Length: 529
Image (tube, rainbow, N blue to C red; front, side, top):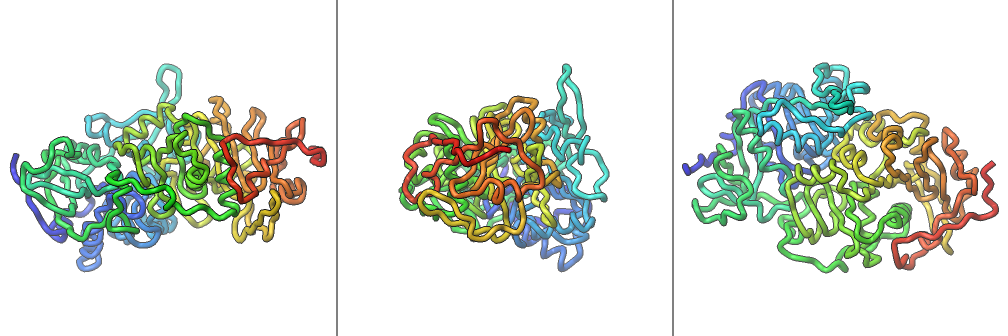
């Protein structure tokens, strides 16, 4: 095998011409992010005004929710079109979309990653149920995020009497990838990375599209010195190597060996959560889990379920997974969501989504931004923030059971717990319950048509999806049904004929719960009339 050219980052970005399509690997918090290449591409544009009108493609959110990652490319003129699985990590790019400065698409993260394998195989696109009856469905918005975006990249098709979505392939001219080590022949290993993502699929799709694969690595070694069993991308798929010895694993650490699976850390190092609204929701959500289940946790409030399970000593009874391809361990929270402490396995992201799409998840716990009377959930477009779906659609539509996790109100909410009861110290300014969500990221009606079990857990009330709609089934001890719940909803939820039950009072005490199961009772004072 021939040696590959080793070039500087500045030389690499000069290969990219106007109107090229560029696909970028990475995930939030710097995970597998080719940061040096992105920085130098931005600097070239600022210095020279070129390249111009790029199509930028990425499967996950890449950045720090400020200016890094894909945020480096958020310049009018540099980018003409973005096709992304998530927008939250690059608010500058989201602003360009909201201001109608670029064409903007948002497709499910799992669809994006799996579509790369179809492109690599020379297929015209991918057929899947993922996205039906959401904003990605062409009967709604078709994944288009503004009025400027016109071209249809997804369409509804019928196969043997069943509806599917067909996502078209896209051309790939250049790929920015990252690995830990490359040998002189371009073989790549990722021994210091916390995920594989779709490295192999992205390289294959780019190569078979006639594109150019550029890889940023921390170190370069002699040909033939990398163990073949550790090579995740063979050199036949790589065109250029860029050396960045200062490459770090995530934005939060140069290298954490517990993320890459090389060391196990004591679970005692995971700090217990404060007993607040976040922990209340995580505890109630955890009570929906059962031993032996395979579980997915979303970013935000839902990721607290892992901490609670660790506190309770229950992690060995369930298997936590996250969509980036992580199986087992405890998902990291916040900016670096996408890696896990002490993972049992790290697999390619497209294969994780194969498992998810096929119904392999027993339960998922996900966040929620808005909830309406149909049980629809919006997490993708909230106010003036363009967040995107990420893996939310792939996961929420295909898990056997979905537990949405969020506070009842937001914007200044403060609560306290005493003697097993909840007190609202300060009410939030905005209710998460609305008459109709701004954008449908999860369709309650579609879920009911498929017999999916769906719950909505807040710090003061728990709802279930029933055939007739959204039903209030539990409230927290100390909460007034009318004042604290019904009067703060723009619609009246269904109420069970045998009365609204109390949430387990153990949730609101500092002691451990000692198990998954919840106990509830129907107090006489709660009247459904």
